[in-house]
Length: 219
Image (cartoon, rainbow, N blue to C red; front, side):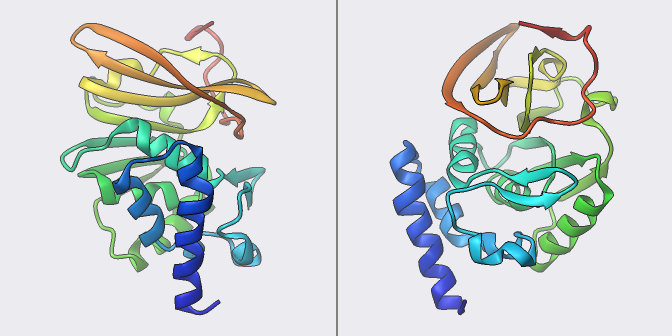
């Protein structure tokens, strides 16, 4: 594709796939139109970069559908000064979106190949407010109340409260819970000492790997 064709394809993706899926936030739509998603897709699948489908990344993992990525970003209502934790770097595209919307991003993945590829792709976009970490965010000691936004890009079979302690006052946590083919996307918001759970929409995304078992889990 030419640059002009890619730009047209991104515009059509945003307006014909993403907006009809109840994504009305202009900032999110702009990000999806401006960031070159095609640069983050494995070369063999570049022709499918704007398709309404999950794209294989290797290691049994996939990129979320564009509309799923956009709904997640919209629900998190990211502000320019937000400190962000991403659980699951994957292709690095969502990482780029988070970094463009917020202040800083700490992103964790258990696959070294994903970390290396994401580092290259982010550098090409001159995105320098991201720290990439090889490791399992659920098994890493992270600062309490250290993040305004937490984005979990893979699903959990059961809800885990493990990440709640990391939310700063007013912080938002997005995760998907359940078993395929029907899962629930949810938003957890900290209001003082209270945590409010809102169920957003039904979806189906790839499970996270290497989750802690099972003491931190509840229905």
